[in-house]
Length: 192
Image 1 (spheres, rainbow, N blue to C red):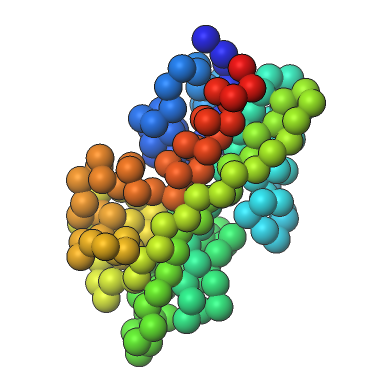
Image 2 (image 1 turned 90 degrees about the vertical axis):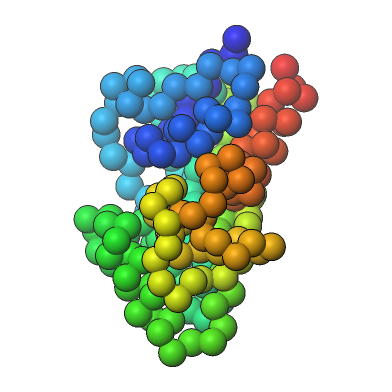
């Protein structure tokens, strides 16, 4: 079984990836006992995903993939975007991020948004990126306790419940990360 490193400390992301990614042994940074935080200093999802993949590849010399994900709200000119995790401050509080976003949209009728993930894959000879998106709208209040991040306020297109309310299986099938991971998985199967 081919070994891959997922360059993240976020165990929610690890569980989501392992649920849809078979045929490969995927290790997170926690599995490798690598605790260094990798600063996201680029100004795009692609740039941050590549930065993390390159950094971890240099440390472990093993094929690696990294993601950068976020919520883009049309009425906020794409914010919070690459700052999604720390939208309300550096302590990265999901509750504060959701509250700040709902407050920013309190008088806004245009609630269109999308989740976006960029996956960057790196090995000794290749760097490639894959994108996954899911379109939807921002709810008027928090609903549901499932998922993480902005899931309790994001209603995916075609549904009337937030990701926080929908069953885990539906969220996994629809999610931006699952869509990007599926593209990575297909790519890896095509080259092995």
